[in-house]
Length: 222
Image (cartoon, rainbow, N blue to C red; front, side, top):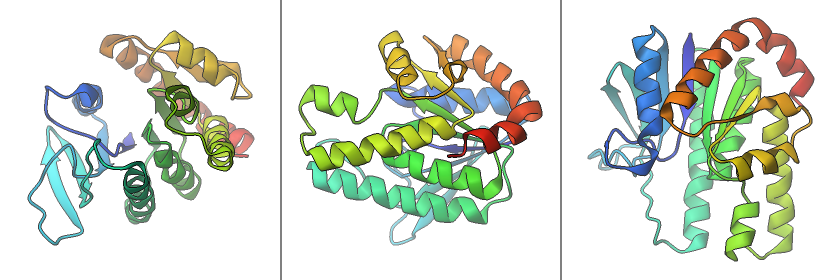
């Protein structure tokens, strides 16, 4: 299968927290799948200079690195602007790639779900969401998001992505239960606790996607 991964903070560094998706990509490649990643440059730190994108071949994966820096110490407005820039550029680059058989997207940032849904519809490919937490709910609980208009907008984006997705991976029970309050079909939500359980369930999703995706996309694309 041709698999397109959307992950703004993808990294090949084994010491970083989000390295799970590099390991997942390596396993997919080892099984004969073609993996293309669209990411920002924050995790890779390629010397891109004035170039808009960089291309990297690593562990059998093709990585498209958008020249977007990011620092978690940035002010919220600047973070949001960079997240939306990633969403816009990832959507543009994704449309120029060969049609994938499956799209795998990592959120938060919530903005990543925008190109994920858009490219899923454009290519007619099923979408698998990996939700490390629900947003804006998590931001509300931390007190970092209080604007009710933005909260309402974010909830609509979240619900649209979750209900469009073919399957959703959650990484803790509280997130999985919260997602079930958002989606229309409960079987979509899969709880994973570590890389091994993630990989095992991902293999199952791959098999399901090859036979069921076309029909299910039509039913869940609302």
